[in-house]
Each structure stands twice: as structure tokens, then as C-alpha cells.
Length: 447
Ligand code: NOJ
Image (cartoon, rainbow, N blue to C red; front, side):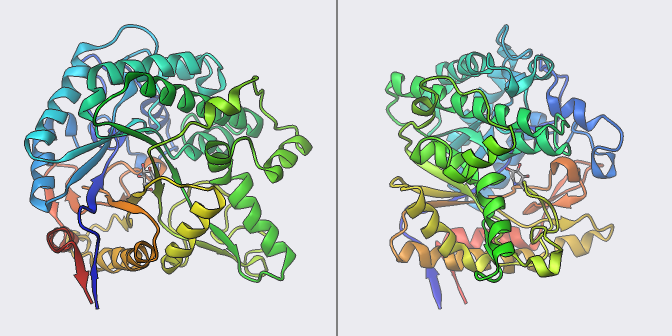
């Protein structure tokens, strides 16, 4: 069977500033929350820090050349707020602007469409000290940052993303294993609320500019949970908790339907977790968007008899790696239920999808990543089916161009099409790089 994707389907790769750039004290950059967090002993697997990471701050041309080789049509990257405004709310750093100007120009010269995220988790540390997203002043600080980005690059970016996976801000403030490392559920919910207001303000600002070529959206990851036994009340409750109370529902509901869901509202009231909500916030948050980016990695089946009341991954929610079982075949169902439930009538993109490999000391084993090829196929098949059944998915971005800093998993999880040698900073193509290039060239694949 041949899986051919629609004409003009956007095949891309994705990265993020904190994970690839390095150069954290170069070119006038301020420190980020993740710079500081990763330097706290014990926080990151293997003790990884991002001082150098993939050194893309210096090697961006080489990276764009890799993309050109793959034939990607679009590159999803992120701006580093502390590189643009080192303390988050003061002076703009001209060297930071110059860096992204060079990157964007290089992409354009190579015919690669920029898809850029304003915030992919690297908060200026100076703002973290002021309370981070828990501080309501964040809405003003973020708006100014967005304004600086739009003033400088507004029309150069075809796809603007305000926030990537806002759940990370919940995890970092409620679960402790992401920056800033807090374990305060109520504070985390205030952070998420303020973050959503920041999103709305940025979209309003964007609309006021009437850019010719640019569109704006947001990326919310969907790790959907289903009860193993729909008749089992525990399974049902566990899946609902993961979806609505500590998952995508926290964001998709206010973004697309307006306000928090009844389930979440009740839960927050009963547990004294309700954030301070100002009049008009829900209108600000619910802006008309041009596209919705879904990061999709897996689906979870909650069988509480097996896991003793916990989620399928044995955790208590949030954005985790190393899921025990693969249920990617359910992607079409996830897509159709998501667009239906949240009445999403705008184009969708799979803004991230990929597979981590363990950092095996045997490099050859990592380079021979048939498992990644099989996994991506297992996602592209239901994606193809979803599109042929009328779901308007316009693109697919593979995470990631090269192995990089995988947050609390440090450099131990390798997601790249290219292997990063962290000693020499060489990028070496894995088997999947050649395969993905052929998928792009053929606009699909044959099985
Ligand atoms: C989620 C995040 O957006 C990205 O930063 C991360 O590396 C990948 N997915 C893989 O976990």
C-alpha cells in the first residue's frame, strides 16, 4: 500500500533553543531557568547541562545544511527569551536579534519555511526570581517580549507559535522535576492561568499588526488516556484525571471552548487550587487562531488493576518519557475526538512526533535506528487515514533534527535523525535520516 500525503503537505523537523543552542553566556544572553536548574546536582540524568548542547549558536549554518539534505519544507525552532531580552523585561539584546536574523535568512536562502515558537520553556532566570509565571506581571513582560519578536521578525515567520506544551510549566511548578523545580499545585495552576493570558495578549498584539504572510497558533501536546475497561470506574476516573485535570484539557478547554471544564473547575474548588482569575481573562485567552499544533507521541491505556490506581505509565500525570506500550495506532481517533470535542475548525499540524533511544555506548547501535523508522511509520499511517477521512492536518514535524538536551533526561535520550557526538559536536546521519529524506521526496512511503 502506498501512503501518499496531500500536495503541499509540510514535512518538517523541530528543535528548541534551550535544547540545541548552547552559548548560554555568549552574545549578551542572560541565564534561563533551565540553565540554573540543570546546574543543580541531581536534577538531570547523567548531570547534563546546556552550556554547549549541540552548539547550534555557532553551527546553525551546518544545521540548515542538514535540513536541506533531508529536503524538509519547514523548520520548527524557538526563540530564546533570555537571548532576546537578557533579564526578561529590560533592554533588548541586539546580538540576540542578530543571531535569529542570520538563522532566518539562512533558512529562507535554502527555501525552508520558518515555524517559530516564542516560548519553549526557557524563561529568563531574572523573571523566575520574580516568581515566574506565578507573577501576574508576566502578562506585561511576555507581551513586550512578543512585541520585540513581532517588530523584528513579524513577516519573516510563516507560522508563529506562542507557547509550546504549556503543561511543562505545570510540571515544573507542581511536580518538581522540570525547572523551576517547585512542588506546589496551587501555584502551578496560577502559573498556567497567567501563561494562557500571556498567550491571548500575544495573539491580540499579532492581530493588530496585519502581517501579510504570517499565521499564529499554539502547540498543546495530547497524551490521551483511555480507560482499559470503560466499565471499570477506577480506570475511567484515572483516565479522566490525566486528560482533564493534569493534561491537555487544562489548556484546550480555555483556548477553544472558553473557561475551565466543569471537571477541572470542581476539582480545583474542592482542592483549593483555583487560580486568581481576573474579569475578561477567559475572553483574552480564547482568541481565534490560524492553526493548532498537536504534539503527539503516544496514547496511554489506564488499567488500574495492573498499576495499583496509577496511570498507565505508573506516574501521576504530566509529560513523561518512556511509555511502556505503544498505542500510536490510535492517533486518528485522538485527532478526530480532539477536533470534535474542542470544536477546532482551523488547520491542525502534528507539530512534534518522535522516538527517544537510550544513549547506548555502542554508537553503531544508535545509528541503526530501524525502531525509529517503524515508530514514525506507525504514526504516519493513522495520520494518513485521518487526513483521508477529512481531518485537516497540514503538516508533520519530526522531533528532532539531531540528538539534543532532553530536559530532565539530559543527553541520555537521543531523539535525533542525526546522532550528535557531544565530544566533537559532529552530526552523523542515522538510518532514519535517509529514510525520512525519501519520505519527503516521495511525499509518502510504500509498505
Ligand atoms: C516535547 C517538547 O516540546 C520537546 O522539547 C521535547 O524534547 C520532546 N517533546 C520530546 O520529549
